[in-house]
Length: 168
Image (cartoon, rainbow, N blue to C red; front, side, top):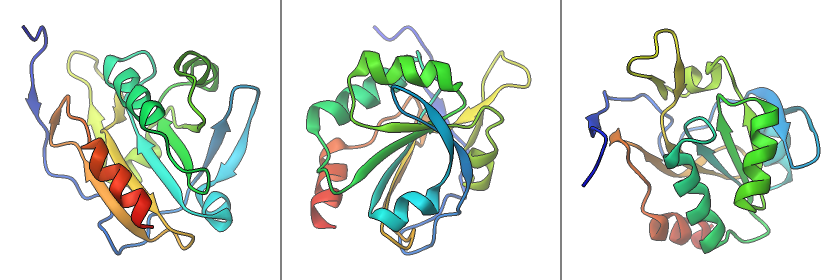
């Protein structure tokens, strides 16, 4: 039995396939350190799988990262998350989930707003987090694949993500 409500999310205005994803600069975290990095710096090096997720520690975040880890993403495609959690929380997430990824810290959810993916949390006045979404970006930040949650919680079809990655 589900012990939480499934909530319909409002329409979104996220970048669609064929559009250019907005650039941004935020602290990019790995298991050891973090530094301000722009999305375009990453895509200049090759394709990026950009994963918007709820705050670290929430079950949807754990589920998303476990699935991505278990399916694996080819080395030539960089996997990068983004959420409102702090760099310290991201370091813990990466260590606990044992994923080969980095995570942007966006505590003010400004990137979520830029991407049309802000999600106000019920019963948490003033707390906005990232609506779950996945974007596969090429070297020009052009969206090659897009998935955005329609309900809370909602998860991507991981086989679709894997197919998009293998087609790039």
